[in-house]
Image (tube, rainbow, N blue to C red; front, side):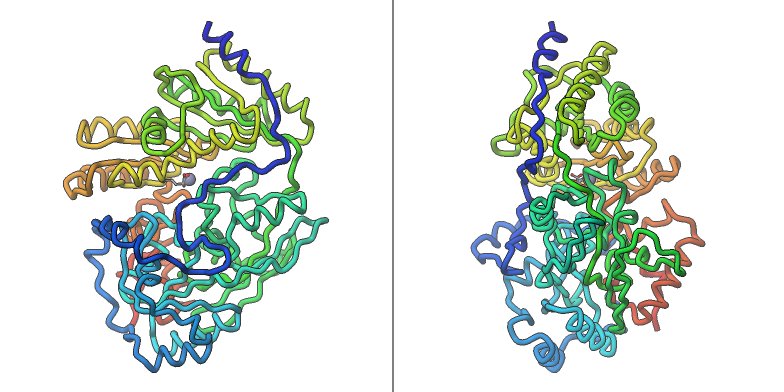
Length: 535
Ligand SMILES: O=C(O)CC[C@@H](O)C(=O)O
Ligand SMILES: [Zn+2]
């Protein structure tokens, strides 16, 4: 019965070239014309939820070598940027000082909005000479406390630098400024018949400079690879104000060290990315999305193995969520409903295909799904019949972080692990925590990225001590990564040794000291502050 019912629903209808509806993270900075805005009325309730600082902050002292901002500094910045781009307004600063999760809160007194690379350069040159620490900030959608000040660092927000500079249809290379909101680039490219090789839930707010600086992963990495592959060039400003023009658009360029890679994923600790050139794939005409239920994790794994083999080049996303994740989305997100009839399934998988031949793609996906059902890998499933259905499926998956925020306190772990063993960690955490917390596992199964989230009514050091260092040690034993795609930020700067050797971290520290001798760029983040010592 189940098979026939599901089979009937597996009728395909490619929703083709339309781009799917987006659900940006609610981020007031996402306004496309004004960079920063927020009504003060929204703030009271918002700030009252800032109730937790990660233990890491408790152990960090403000670097005494840093200067404290004074009125001469502010006047100097006004001379460079003009009065209106030197922001001291309390509401704006409250937003910019606080991370998306409302876990980390700095006390910066100043936000600067440069409009050109030259302005970024002049600002940094001055900050470096005065030893004023800075935090580069884009859409402030980070999840590890990397984009907000720890103490009184000056915030440099590049959101006013939002021009598309060029697009070459033949090569597919887009060159743009760092403050372009990802979704705006998606729209721009859509009109040209291209797509971004990067897609993430925060696309309505996050900016390409931030994406590159954090080496954001997202939903399409399984198909298009990481930004280390698709970013062809970068312009970045160093701490001393020097502008590094590495804004090439070439696919091949073996002339010396490829230094742009140092800026991809270094979270603004080596320089501020001001421009990016990125290789974009053509938009293909048929897109299909299936929302599937699996009885156990082993079936999800086998399904991934089969999907790679049988769908091959048309596979464009393979995401999974466990039953706890689905329930969170259903209980906390407005208008979200389960596309499958009520039944207890332990896991859900979203498989997206993108190709250029509608009937071939349909047949291929349908045949794959029917076979997987016969083999018992899928217990039930539906295929989106139009763009709205596809959006509603994606809303479930992309909405889990928002649902977690609404559910209370959340401890987040973004781990790269062998697919075979990754869910064991979720189960072990459940055993350890029992009824004291909800343990949620979901993520980008296609590229081995588990988002382990632990949800509790409020933050509690006793619970934290049960989670850490266990999660990091477990990951390290598997030779996994404690930061798959979110970065280390403030949250995990001290944890880097779980994934990197001592020698590797020492070399990173030497690079940091060479490029930023005064340590003004995003201090206390990425590397343990104790090993980046400054006189
Ligand atoms: O909240 C998380 O843990 C993951 C957020 C994001 O990377 C996602 O894949 O939805
Ligand atoms: Zn993710």
